[in-house]
Length: 435
Image 1 (cartoon, rainbow, N blue to C red):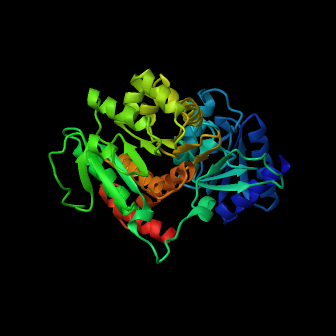
Image 2: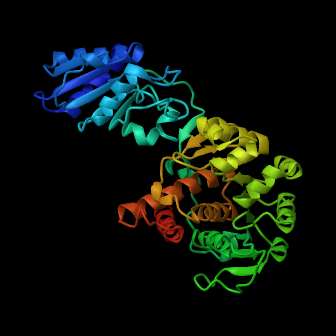
Image 3: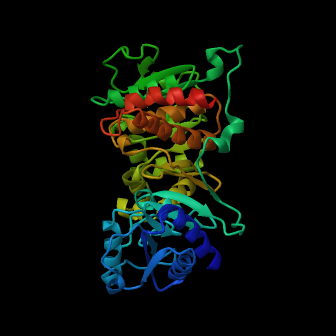
């Protein structure tokens, strides 16, 4: 507690900067409140003007230069209500920096779920190691800028990591000059039912521009003989695409739920090819026990890309239950279906087959638009076709997808109005910078 309070005071002093400003410390009844009180004492020793409040009536009516949130930490087990809820609301009304200790009060440390109400901090200093709840679901909207104070302690051996390019730097494959398209692999996109050709084409374009040597788009409804925006794509009937010499498949973009789609998916699952399962493929598996069993028995790499509603269907539950514990849901899917899984959303959770997992911090609200999932599926398919392992493809591809969208937003293309097609070109630029 002494170390945590001292570390918090050091950061608070930087944020307050001017000792003439008033600092409000909200101190709750538990250990988090103890950390806050120590931080207050250390600031007072440096001659900051500090007020400590454990109840609403103890908060003076003045303009604050900094608010320190020490109401509740990782031990919170129930929704915040009553007087503490009013204190949270008071902190959220201030226009000064708000520093949360360990985790913003009201935010579940494991799931990122808001428990009744939660402090919206501009900064969070978390102790010893990152908490999952800071990085997923509602966490990123409440924690602000995160810093970690290790307090001179070694954390337990990790079973989870923040997804970064650096984690997989050693497996990135720069192309030699003596190279031909056959070395870049072949991938087929299976989908494109009537009225949904765009989904398959977006996935195909993404696979093409992320380096796959040959990209076939197997369409259930091939009314368009060529993609005028990407004539390099080879359009085929879906059944014909299955019989090609391939290195990977992406099944699901615009696939639909017809009997033919179900048969096509079954054939893909029985193959020995690495496979990305997206969108309608996931819905078909959720409704068919035989397909689930075939998927779970696969030896080849299998990557699943559900959003929370699709994950709920696959787990036989609802979206709210998935969002209540995203890490648990992703790991259950991975175990049940013997697959590498990305549970999409704010702070996507990536669960590997062997039980460890990652959280991805790239991406922004501009990605909440049509076709983004199709693009991700195409990126993952391209990486599998080029020989990346399932785990490497999953983490690198998801991280890249969000990083490309972030780069677009920095350049003014979004977040509002960002399109999936724009992300493809940005992903290609970013990927080449990484290699």
